Length: 271
View (tube, rainbow, N blue to C red):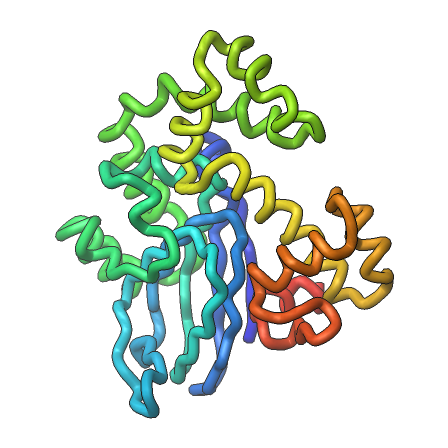
């Protein structure tokens, strides 16, 4: 499978982490383990074969336009077909700016995006199928995103606050000083957590756990450090806390984890 990322245009660079393309030359069967990434994605199928998922031994046609909400519980996504997917990956806290729905409602779900985006999404998909290049597709998608962004511009006012909260979350003492952090913004700690949930679909505590897990899973996949070292580097209190969180997000303990089971990790290791 070929995977390529593309940077967004200047106006959307604060909202979109990247666009990406996943392609195969022939129809292939894939069994992909999906773990928490902290991101929300939209994927458009542009291949001759529509995506099919293996469910109870039968291949079931899947939506041509998929919205992947925040993954918290791990799951396996099996599919068959010749893949040609164009994707949009938002930052943790920016996808909400493009939707009227509560972003947390998408958690642990793969949703038919046509149910949310309606006719304009169907029209965009048809234009993407006709487009002759990735650059042309990016232009079409950016026009679509900008239209939705300005439709929900009332969310801009609080985005600066959420950006600041995201920055504070990277500090080791955030949860020890959450009252002083919220006081600095003139809000209660409860409201701080509520607004973060509204924009990301995650609580600050769960986001922090996912960020720590993402760092640890790449180190485990690299197989170059001991579990004790990984736990320390990723900010876990001790090795047992690290193993507990790792099992929660992957379904397996680090010593039994296979990075080849995840397309995201496989691509990252190859690059």
